[in-house]
Amino acid sequence: MAAIINAAYNVFRHVFYDLRDTRSDDWFLMNSVWAPLSIIAFYLYFVLSLGPRLMKNRPSMKLDKVIKIYDIAQVILCTYITERSLTVGWARRYRWFCEPVDYSNSLQAYLDMKTVYTYLLVKLFDLLDTVFFVLRKRDNQVSFLHVYHHVGVFLGTWVIMKFLPGGHGTFLGTVNSIVHVVMYTYYFVTNTWPEYKKNIWWKKYVTQLQMAQFLLVALHAAPVLFIKNCDYPRAIAGFMAFQYSFMFLLFWDFYKKAYRKKTE
Image (cartoon, rainbow, N blue to C red; front, side, top):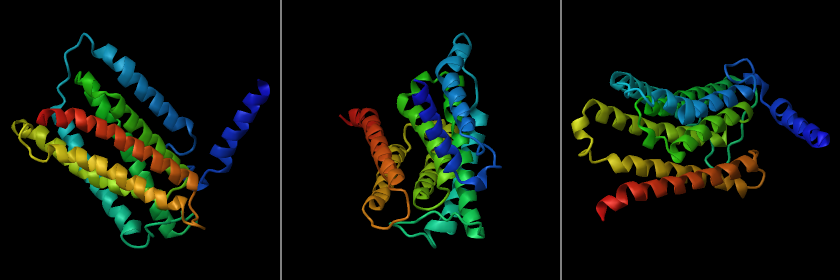
């Protein structure tokens, strides 16, 4: 037993200490894996246990103004990340089928890192979505899909930032930010003018756009698995192809339940 524990510790230390990108060690959340894990542990405890218990005998909180500000902030932040990721990489110098990570100390590499790091902080900000659901007693919206998606994206982005802050995997952040600009614009419109909520014509297309992003990211990751001499980890590309194919299936199941039954 002691040998197994020691072997597991050695693997953990090798991955999170020897293989890490040390350039971001002094940045918030980036010094240790325990920081993001602690945040996720508290997030899960609050949204699945503590929050519902605290709100059980209380009326739902009125957070309309807070949520409108939150939606506007998300639109601004995601627009900024979209602009940065296109300007820094995908619209200019990145290759679409195989783009390695620049681990140098150049200005360009720093801009890559800064863009990924900003995206990570926005994914941390995203966790407030679920907190708002709990405080407003919208427990039906705290679904497995919702929680799994938020946890997975935040932890996945931390891993990318710590080990691969740039290159091929950042395509996800670009596409996701574009989708979130549309999504939070929709939320702001329906929160500000509730009378449009049932009639706004592009409601279901927001979900379709979310599904499209998962397919696009999975397809974009796949070529790395087959291109020879591509200096980007195939294991990471393979995981992304699998993960976002899985996310597509989860959203597809949600879409069928939410929209197809309404048309039957």
